[in-house]
Image (tube, rainbow, N blue to C red; front, side, top):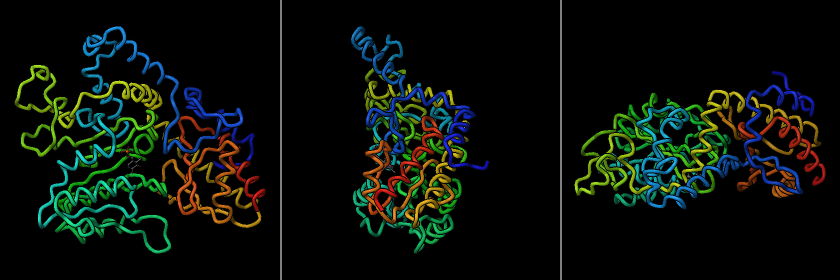
Length: 424
Ligand SMILES: *Cc1c(COP(=O)(O)O)cnc(C)c1O
């Protein structure tokens, strides 16, 4: 499609957008009494309007039924989490038995590594991307130390090439091949939080499996944002938070995936609790642990119903829209944002920014500001454009297809241009 940087063109795109009606199902914060242009759905998704009812339903059941709510609530609490398997399986490309919700993301990664990081004196290395999300770095370092290894020796970071802003798949494959004999685990963020790069998860998983390692993915920036086929790709395990592209609310529960080939095994190493016990016998309070036949065997506690409620509400929207329509709009909207950015760059006197996100991208564009930097960021925020700032000089823009519009992109461009001109 040939884009134009005009209000009329943007409005026409919105009029033709088959999923435009979903924007009205979200609350937007206001600045100067006007709804903001929201680019930080990669950090915290907006609140879906149906989330309030979902939480109130739980509050009402608790008020009216108290403990009886476990079995007689509108959506009984004892198996509430099982309502997630079907819609989530579609979002991440898995079988229903392979996905669940529990805990939070870093907690789940630690728990999954109990099973999937079993280092030996010979095979103990972990391959990850350089400058991974900090929590993932701390998680991996502490895992290596916990097993008695020097984390500097155990963790091998794949670097970007000098002067490049992205990782090359062939470099990751080469690193895996180089360390094949000593490699225990490959664990990378499926979409990088900083530059927005989408890793070739299928190829990297295949390379890791060929080397005899376990392969897991942190899908914090991928779930609900990119097409995933975790089952078919033979991924061993994965986890993701739900409050970014999946709009479940601040700090909310995490999703977890364990491949079918690891399910139903008797002597698998795993930390266990009563919610992982066979649900038919759970309340018999027996001393011997009988695991659930699915990924729920990794559950520990009875889950927080109040935090799952808004996630379930949000997932209803994903069910309705479908990943296909969502990703089609994502590509159009992101391409239009890129076009608007480049148009503005050409209109201002000197080049003022550079997009560092590679072509393998999803929703996010990371923009390196050459000139005004932090002042421009402050200007945008005051003008009602919510973006985020990452050191040294990067703003990240995520035009989330569920609730951002083409008109938002056009208006953002005009604000950006005025900002650059005002601050020059
Ligand atoms: C957002 C994010 C996290 C956050 O982890 P929590 O345990 O939910 O606080 C972890 N890893 C990555 C890659 C993220 O993007």
